[in-house]
Length: 178
Image 1 (cartoon, rainbow, N blue to C red):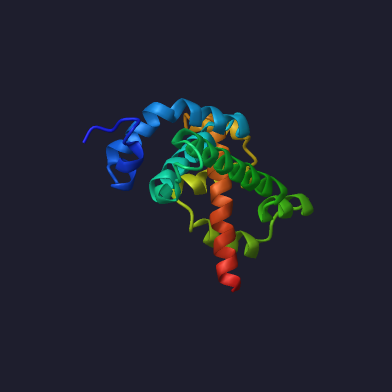
Image 2: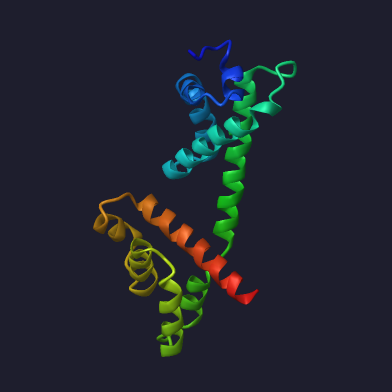
């Protein structure tokens, strides 16, 4: 069935995949503007947040109440609060100094062989690309700009890989402790 302004909510409730395309085509600019207002500059986070907004709309369409507000206002509110969640998450990550950075700052000397062995085992949990980025950035001290050039990617992509890799390693360390 053809998705229109009048039946988009109904089609979302019926799980018609064309309705998500319609939402993106019709409201994508609005959602992008709202998300960009909060997530200034980080293109990967903007795209990821937009995808999360669409997923939220898809799975929570039953909570939409047309008597309280219009559909456009409802998805705008979802975008706003999802973007705020991303900002909070980003701030939390910035405040958290990774174990690697802390160890690097505290020890002005070379790292012990045992520690290197443990770190190699831990880094083997990462994908080849993530492991290469970690080695270059944290062990060899290569600037993220040069790593981005090596992978023919943006510097933000490198930071994203580092952030996600740290999160993976943190979860592994916490799992092993518990």
